[in-house]
Image (cartoon, rainbow, N blue to C red; front, side, top):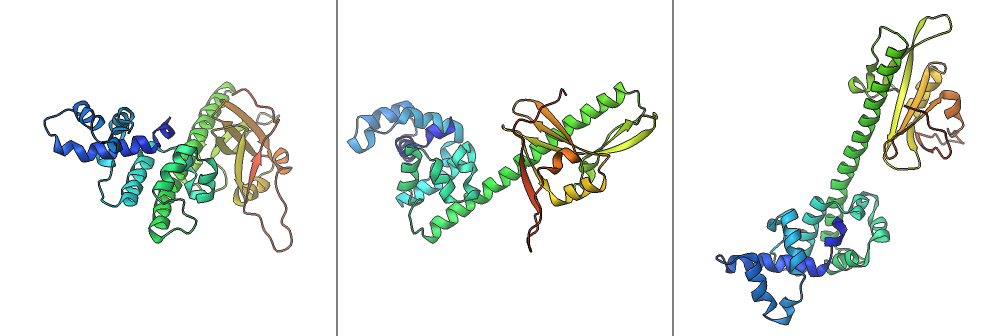
Length: 279
């Protein structure tokens, strides 16, 4: 677990080793550790073994050599967070309080020593959190896009299979790949009772953890209502490799109503107890 490296004894051990390495150009890292462990008590108690493992993961350049202790820790922690992506940092864009709520004791200690949990943060601390938040907001958006695209790929493949099984000489179209604003993702085909071909619009949603859930925008719902009989939702839960399919009527019970001067823009739908279909 990446979180296990966020211990002050490991981080200080790595920073101290990084300081000492240039002083012993002809010695290997284990020999340098031997000198330190037999030296002053202030340098002998660090967790050098895990410090080496950490350095192999993120590189020695990640450990700041600034003279100011807090600046040194802040820079080092930022480098560690960017490369190791601990769970608590992934929610940093939601605010510092959210991070503090899920931190373990060791991580709290690291951030406290760096002055990053001060009740009245300085401008440097604010800038540090803003930079981390910006990085993980981008990472989060990229991850959501990746999950969404995976769902669309699965639906495209599923629709190709269904069209083939129904003997239709058609190919589904990945609409969202060309234009992500039209209100649906995949254009596919079905036959009615008279054996006539007609188009269906599919809005694809995907999530990576349970329970199965989705975010639906007002534009998507508007498009659904305009195509009630030919619009469908396919919701993939990638965590358990399951699919839920719903028509407009089935989704309608989850949609909020505008109240007063308020107007809803998007809604999160959590599908507890909805039966999955075989995909």
